[in-house]
Amino acid sequence: MRDMRGLRESDAYKSTLEHFKNIDPCQHNVFKNLHIERTDSRCPICECLIDGSLFRQNNKNKITAISATIDHFRPIEHYPNFKCEDKNYLLLCSDCNNVLKKSLFPLYGSRTRATTISDISIEKPLLVNPIDDNIEELFTLLFIFRPDGSRILEVAIHPALVEGSYFYEKAKTSIEIFKLGECYTTDTKDNVQVCRIDILRKHFEDLYKIALAFRNHSSELRVLLQEYKKTENKHGFMKFIKNNNFKIIIPQG
Ligand SMILES: [Zn+2]
Image (cartoon, rainbow, N blue to C red):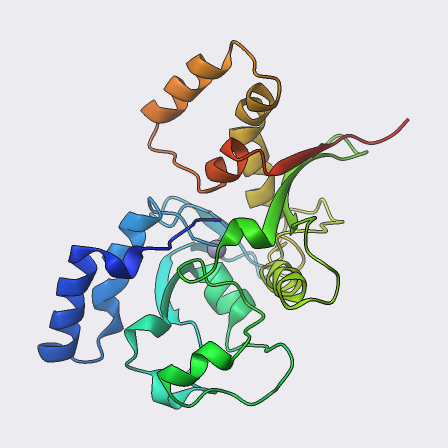
């Protein structure tokens, strides 16, 4: 998951916003590249690569590329007034956007939806927005060794959150909707609807060694970090690791 806070304060964003308002009104695709640069070509939620290099097979055995989509965070089906509101745009991979989130937008407490942009401060969305939310207050990472021998990196509710509180429910709902935690399957076929097992396995393999070296203050850490910097493979999850916001789960017995 990628911390995208500060995106709207950049100069590039401000000039794109000018263009969006005055020259090409309501073409939300003009923001797409800015979001992609911010996430190093990853989905800000599940962190799969969105540069066209990843494919998946659906239950009809059809192979499709996972692509970058920029869409309305608050779906226009429920928020027609927010169609041309730049603060309502968010980059997601095609799986997170079209297969999982779709037009879902659950709220905590009151079911009354905002009708103007100034109303959104009183709304409590149950979906995380990495541009507006501090993702490390909501989530932690779990490096899990499963009894069947497989290894995955899951996203979990931050342990400091109190059950039933707004942030707790927001983290829980986001994990449920984007299928990033509590995975009980090892089936990699059309698993998106159940759990993102293929992505979560890849994240484990990419990041476990470096997380362990951080945890153990290992002498290997410097070399691992140098190797990591050389790759184009930048993860938002690295911030969680550097902040020691993760747990390693090993089965008992
Ligand atoms: Zn995604």
